[in-house]
Image 1 (cartoon, rainbow, N blue to C red):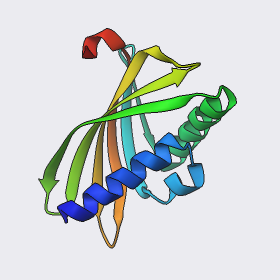
Image 2: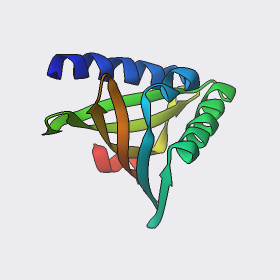
Image 3: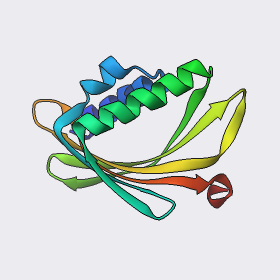
Length: 131
C-alpha cells in the first residue's frame, strides 16, 4: 500500500507541477472537502469550488510562465487506507520565488485507486517562516 501511495504522490506532484487540470480532476474524489485559512479568514469548500480554484491557479501560472516549487515535508499513514501528505507549495515567477507560500495537509484515501479526499491549507505564509 505504501509503495502504491508513493508512486501516486509522485504522479500527483508531477500533474500539479505541469498545471494539468484534466489529470488533476481524476485524482480528486467527488466527495472532496477542504478548509483554507488566508490571513485568518476561513473558507470551506468542496470538489467543484476546488476545481475552479485549481483552474484559476493553473491559468495564472501558465499565463505568467511560472512554475510550482513543491516540497513534501512528510507522509503520515492515518488509517488503513488513508495517508496524509504535508506539502509546501511556492509559486515561482520569472525565476523568483514568491514571498509567500502555502502549506497543504492533504489526505488521500484508497478505494480501487488513490484519491485526494480532504485538505487543510494555510495560505500566504511568509517564506522566511520555513528557512
